[in-house]
Amino acid sequence: KPGKGKKGKSHRKYRGKKQKKPEVDILSPAAMLNLYYIAHNVADCLQLRGFRWPGAPKGKKGKNKT
Image: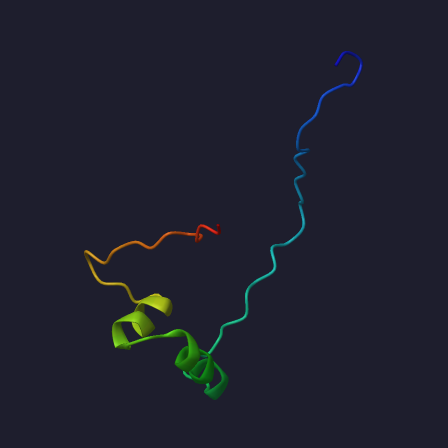
């Protein structure tokens, strides 16, 4: 439609300092309790914590909802 102008995302650049993520203890009791509920086996546990092995299947980012 004429006269509407541009539509799109505006790009903002912040020149402030990036916030540093705090180090998280993956062996803390809270982390272990969380892992107990989300992991199905040892390999799954290691993969969820970022210790992947060569040739590991890459999972899908999102699940299809129908």
